[in-house]
Amino acid sequence: MQAGVIVFPGSNCDRDAMDAVKRSFHKDAIAVWHKDTSLPKLDFIIVPGGFSYGDYLRSGAMAAKSPIMNEVIKAANNGVYVIGICNGFQIITEAGLLPGSLMRNKNLKFIHQTQHLRVVNNNTAFTKEYEANQHIKFSIAHGEGNYFAEKDVLEELESNNQVVFRYADKAGNINEEGNANGSTHNIAGIINKKGNVLGLMPHPERHTDALASGIDGLALFTSVINSLK
Amino acid sequence: MQFKVKALITLKKSVLDPQGKAIELTLHNMNYSSVSNVRQGKVIEFLIDAENKDKASITAKEICEKLLANLIIEQFNIEITEV
Image (cartoon, each protein chain N blue to C red):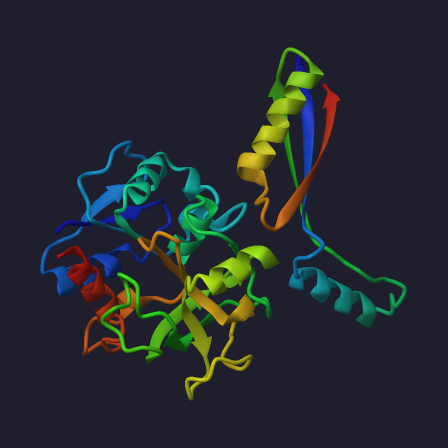
């Protein structure tokens, strides 16, 4: 089982992603530079957080056009597990791997806090090690995390159970108070129809060490490992 | 031939524009109560070398669709003039 982390100019959560992989896979992930035109053989690809291309033009817009992204798209179409975290979520929506778009936070502020979430779909390759509707906490740190999709796309996402994580308040209720960035339907993370591409704004890779921020994120990585067996 | 392109990119009407709203509120605080429906967009300018204006226009449209605008949430207008 081999994981890879794509690195763009401005990515800054690639090290945490590699650390999370080391803790769960017990094997180093391979760092792949955005300008490469081929991927090593990978079973799990992480598109990490950060400020690729300085968030210029639109967050993730230019990273989505990096040479390596053609290969990531091919790999995703071939069923390889791909996860986009924060800027990575922005990149993979711009690349068309997931529907919708991440816009400026509703209150215009960069929000950096511990975020309560509900795992609303634990029947995915990325969440099967979580309990149904489990109340968890991941860090969020973003200025453009406001998920938007057109009404018909949204209806499809909901009816297909493609919403995987929703923002919740401290008590675990999915409501306006728990929705820091204004995302439609409190959507924090979604999966594609095929079930192999996940995108989320919160940071699971920051929560795989009991001594530092807890291990709520570990189950995501072990879910992928168990899905690969 | 060289052409100057000005691409105006704005959020679609159905999309929330908090920056536009913030600008509107500030203008109201400055006593411009006559102002409403403020929307903020962006202008991207560039030069294109092309055989003729039609070809330049096609390239400009392609550039807008592929990179400059996110068609899920934005629309664009192109102004093109010969240099």
